[in-house]
Image 1 (cartoon, rainbow, N blue to C red):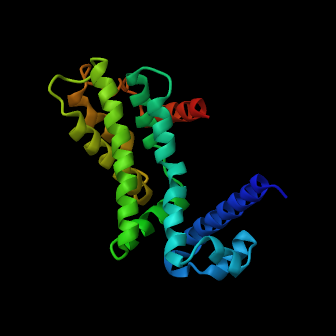
Image 2 (tube, rainbow, N blue to C red):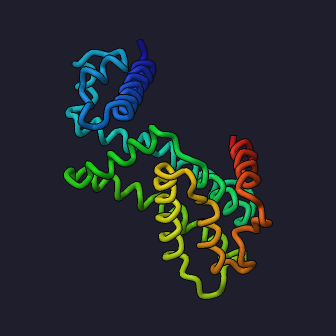
Image 3 (cartoon, rainbow, N blue to C red):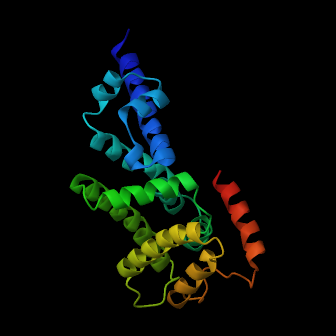
Length: 221
């Protein structure tokens, strides 16, 4: 058996364990996370889990990286992808106004809560937020370079503020689905954009904006 094949199998097993941790946390919370349940979900032995992860804390930390696929990677793909800065901003606003899945919200809240008592987790979550914030700052730098931002706008502060607002709106909408997070984001951005809109909502109703979100999601694949 070649070394490359062995490494591939090892990576697949490790990933299967991480996905099992995610599933157990979503179903049972951090308090219900046990190596036994993870092993059952992943179809591996207790010893195999400890081969890849020395402790429960390491299992939890692995989920932080796994969670990037649900929020940081999609955002970075939009910002670094094709299209004008204005089109990217529209896509981000539409994407961030989509309701998050229950599992993602449950895990995100648990990680934030646990980070109050776990310094390694706090540092990991802080690094993820810094990466999230950096992506938004880059988007507003692109808008500034395109002449789409009002002169004198502090892109660092605007990027940090919008990153925080949009992320918190996702959580609040999970509590109250009636919150029109898209309209809130557009109103927050309006004073900073040369055209005064983010981009123009055309007076669209909430159902019309929902249809537009569906089309945008389809374009992102």
